[in-house]
Image (cartoon, rainbow, N blue to C red; front, side, top):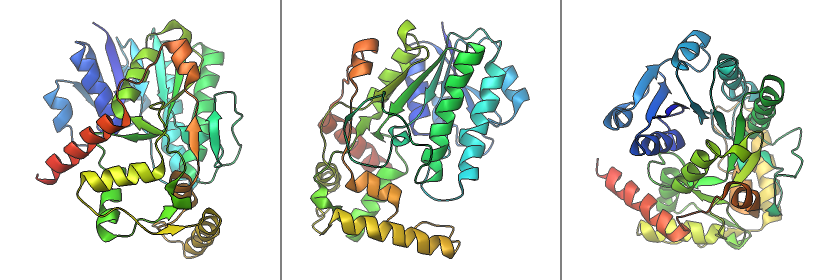
Length: 331
């Protein structure tokens, strides 16, 4: 039996990793905050360690006997000072890596993001693409810095790090992006950018878990970075319409040109920052990237090196995501 130490286990991705680990008969030891809802983790009989990612004492104790670390905890969002994101995404990771040093683990899987690439159109971009030094928001900036840190510990300290970069993750138990999109569809406020023609880097959560678990055991994954998506072209329009149709809501009809959207996003961000607004405008540069840029990334390296093959296509994955939303709306 293998013991996995999972951070972010009460979140979207981490809960699916813990569920799969338990389904395979392994131990899922999960670091959770005192305020987190652990109902699901208890239902799958995961080991629960209460503590903070920034507490070295808790981590050192929790890592005893661990074989594999899956680090999926992160502060997400597209608004707020970069220092707030660094505190969790970089310094929290540093504390975890320090605690791992000297421990006989076989793998440390760091869950990053395709957001680390430059905010521009992408057509088959692969892992050889250099990353920009400065990013458009605190989240992506901190994720770039976190990748650099994780690989630095691999080179300097021999920690067997593997990095996976998922795209836009969707599926059951998403309590943030999909519910917000449904609210906006209900309000009729979803507007296409550039007619919704460009690719969205869809990544079904089950496919991502497949990739994480392969990276956790494949010898060739150590010291490497892998783009992970469903490997399928899904336009923004197809995605939004699939959600609207699944929820029985009107499809969006309005559209604004990409150039206008870029101008509006920069102007609105500048205005909100001058006001020191704690909440972002509806259109930010991060939203623009999600809804208006072509986000097509190659997963060729994951296919050839790891043997990763996405098992769930978009239609099936979205069907599962919508079914979960409908079921949980009743509760």
